[in-house]
Length: 180
Image 1 (cartoon, one colour):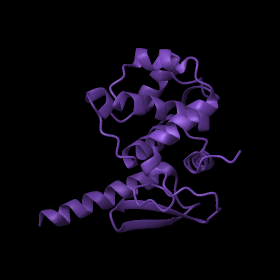
Image 2 (tube, helix red, strand yellow):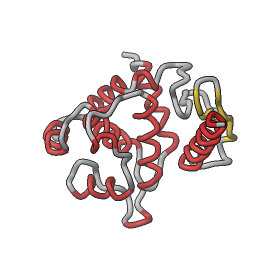
Image 3 (cartoon, rainbow, N blue to C red):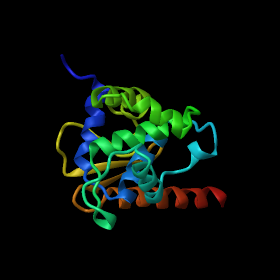
């Protein structure tokens, strides 16, 4: 059976792993924001931080990473778990409800649920995706800044976190230009 196209596109994000806690948070935030999921409360609106990820690990919401402290590395399954948490929070669920819900969820089901929720950001050719992820290897990464504005960055030139920082800097500059 062929994989769902959204699942395939979501799996392409595994190539950005491993992440440190900050990089994992930035990648998950970019995908959730690109999907246009509207937060229902303040905790859902909050961007996950490295500290929040460590809290999620300590409470069992996210699996333990490889390594410890600043050497801890997170992989694709951690990304799926963090995405699921942020998606469910934006739908109004509490962390306790999310933990109970995810206790019995297999990796495949978790992946399908996340892909379905992020479908707008995972559409082939979508201009909402922050970093275009395809199965085709490319030396370039496409970073969507705004409607009709993209940055093209050589893949080995920047980390995911710096790509997001570039995107935000360009957005801020565009905002200042609009204020004039």
